[in-house]
Length: 319
Image 1: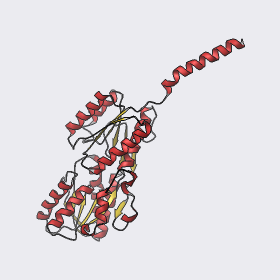
Image 2: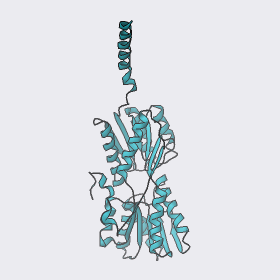
Image 3: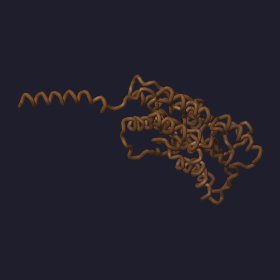
């Protein structure tokens, strides 16, 4: 009897050994990353953070990272290529939160986990982003405070992804609460770039002889805005933005760029690391307590720039 039990125990142990791999965690072999544009350091930091987290899971992981340059057709093609390549996880910053839905579903039907980063995406398995409404609020509250609640303000808009829409909505809510503030314009697209911000601001400087402040939806546009104003000899314009990028750190320490006063910070490197971590949890069959995570923003100003850590969490980021 004892011999029979021992044989049975050995057989069960052998069976468990054979079935253990099926219970083991899935290995992240390949990750596809589709982001706005690799000409923006924000997206570069996102890609680096995602790669760092992926390699912490599997040092041999293959990382496929591309910018779609705000062209949704190009992003569709990238997602289809990721599906063909057999990636395990897709990390994306969607060009359009709703329109990207069918492409996400195609990926999910192929057994791929999809996590949206920085911007919401319809049907994504999880989302990690900055609390962009709050970021817009604190950046524009700085304007209201600096102007003592009175003045002419421009909201310099950008590509209509959810992150930008939320920032603008947060800003508008704050400005509308100050009856002495007049919004001269809120619908001009600065393309999320320095050149775009410069071009839009040049037009506004011609149209409006009195501009007291500008809220730009990101740091590159703010830097372009400042350059346009200086080129035309305009002074005393309060400029705020969102990102807390390396370039804005330089501007906030530079007396020549005194009109740039504040930026609501983001941490793209940590954001992407967290997004990949959630993706790996989903890949391993775990249920997320919170599929949407919002990261708080803090206002970086000329007064506190000396203590700002910024994107230094990314060891490869430089000014």
